[in-house]
Image (cartoon, rainbow, N blue to C red):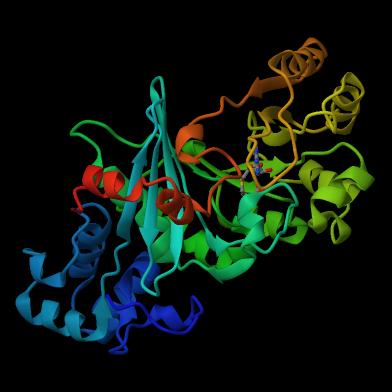
Amino acid sequence: MTERARRMSARELMRDERGRVDIKSLDRDGVRELVVGECGGTEGQALRVYKALWQHGVTSFAVMPDVARSLRERLEERAYIPMLEPDLILRSKDGTTKFLWRLEDGQRVESVLIPDGERLTLCISSQVGCAMACTFCLTGDLGLIRHMKASEIANQPLQVGRQLPEGTRITNIVMMGMGEPLHNLRAVIPALTVCLDDHALNFSHRKITVSTVGLVPKMAELAAALPVNLAVSLNATTEAHRRSIMPITRKHSLDELLDACRSFPLPSGKRITFEYVMFGGENDTLDDAERLLQLLRDIPAKVNLIPYNENPDREIRRPSDATVKAFQHHLVSNGLSCSIRTTRGTDISAACGQLGKARQQAVERGWLEEARRVAGLV
Ligand code: SAH
């Protein structure tokens, strides 16, 4: 596909140059409407088309053998099947793999595949760049370039899944890549609906987690639409500190955010995950741990500590392992469940908060050639 010269919106990208609709941004009902309503097909054919897209990963209507040729031709005139173009695939020493995708308009986003024992987690992106401007996050430096379309979001698990060896499956999806998923619910909801649908990608709702900076009004909207897990990036225990590192706090205060968590409709037994990035000398003392404990006292919560991943663009330091362990110990010994996120994929800049500069770094570090070879592109 040709790189389009001007910056485009997700809405404009719903149709290609020939005016055909992006069929993979439609949910199952949308595909039925297209196949039955517009193309005169049957309900059964609509379901076969939908399954061909999401369960067989077909890239052309011509290779849908159990759909009548006349219907395929009508579909071809009205719709197109978008796929992500793999631009770079980088493999870390620790088994983590980063996928850099090129989108229809030439923009780039990343997904990270993280093997961990029995688990194979795919971390996916929801926006090109991000509008939230958290001071410590590299993706924030890009600003919001555009929202991703539903097809671009759901194609990440589809296309990574299809590259895996026979018998291997992605077990978990986390929306912790580039972007703020609750800022793009219009696309995130249909995309995750496809991930959950047993006629499509068929993931269990227990295996999908949406992570947010705390866009309070959108949290209830997400819960009303989908039964997925919620993670909240807390990162601070006082209003002043959170305001200074996460500008969204000026709009929705820490209190307001915690209230929204209290009233978040959790199925029984489920808890909200609170991510807490630890910045050396900034929010890593036992006083901070105690305040965190108090803030979460009456919320079904578990904490995920993320030792800051350092990068040359920031002065911020990662706390020592002993500091992180002591912090964890304080929470756990007071009855709050708390894990430490192992840093993965540092050598390929795939760790939390490092997405968005892959191509630039790859060029600088001479990875491009090698990565293209790994990806079978040259
Ligand atoms: N916008 C969503 C999804 C991004 S998730 C959210 O903020 O939750 C990315 C996670 O990585 C967030 O918890 C964020 O606080 C964290 N993060 C960002 N930069 C980081 C860095 N350099 N080191 C460790 N964690 C980081």
